[in-house]
Length: 215
View: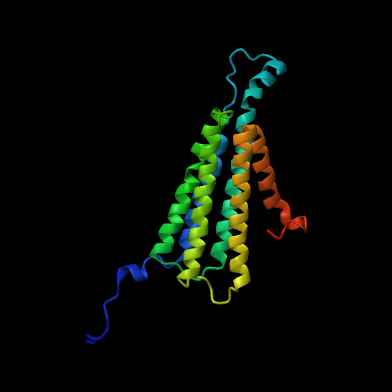
């Protein structure tokens, strides 16, 4: 028996598969995207007997439809960002797994902050908490990538230009979201939400616009 070999430390062998992280992520994102639409309630049928009455019952739901669009785009962007990172990571470890779980924990909060914003659409505190959710999630996905790079978990064939592009994408997005929050403090929730939606649409369709795909 070779006694010269050091014992294996469990923390050094734990959670080395990124495929399981990707699978858990897909499931949690799917649940969060489903929950945000379930918050849009059908108007109570009592007293509604005409198209005009139904329309009047739907009008108060406008903030919920707007926040649904807002959050679906937000979740889609973060899902795409995480999947992009995972495609460049060769292996995981325990710390990377826990950072990924923290990122997913912030994703799981979006149904709550979305519903809060829809219920208190005109209150800046509701917008601030929603923005805080975005900020913490963006910080988490940045930290996850930064740790993976520092710990040598990124594939050896990934160059510095990809690392720079991923970091730039996150920081630019967070700066634009922060701009939306400032707009909310100055002009109110509605202009802020519309600005953030435009930012998200830019990130969603920018690869087709040529000049905007640099961020």
